[in-house]
Length: 199
Ligand SMILES: [Zn+2]
Image (cartoon, helix red, strand yellow):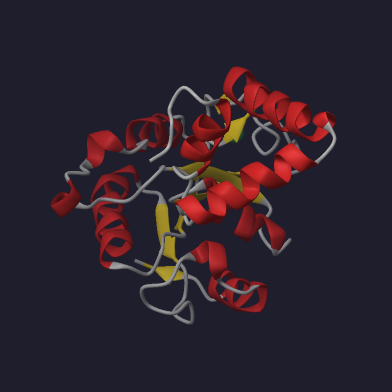
């Protein structure tokens, strides 16, 4: 049993809460940190503190950012008429890495999943609708994961977006069903983006 009052036990306990890190790995990481110069642990602690204190959601696209509006929303070279809707910041980064998309983003922070109790109010759909009603957007690209939840979210968005007269497209097939855009290779993402079609 870990001793919650022992600093090493606490560190192992906190590390083991991270995804994919069991108690053995947590212990290995903790003892590795302890063997290194103190600067490593202090820098890690400072980075975690900075993330807690400075990172928030962009008030426009809901990306995680230290500056509001974020890097993408303040880039004048990006086309504000095309908005790519993604489930996660990791998916945003995956699409950005392709260098093929020069529009703006919107991060929902999830997808509809009634079984898990995730409904429209749990996603950042309201903020998206506010953006769309500003009249600047001509196309919404649904770049959601090819899962039941992602598809359900795309169809839900279609019902909301259609009355606004805005074109709604989705990524072309090619991204493996059930997969996560974050882990999709760049060539596939580029093809999926350029072959996008109306919902
Ligand atoms: Zn933003």
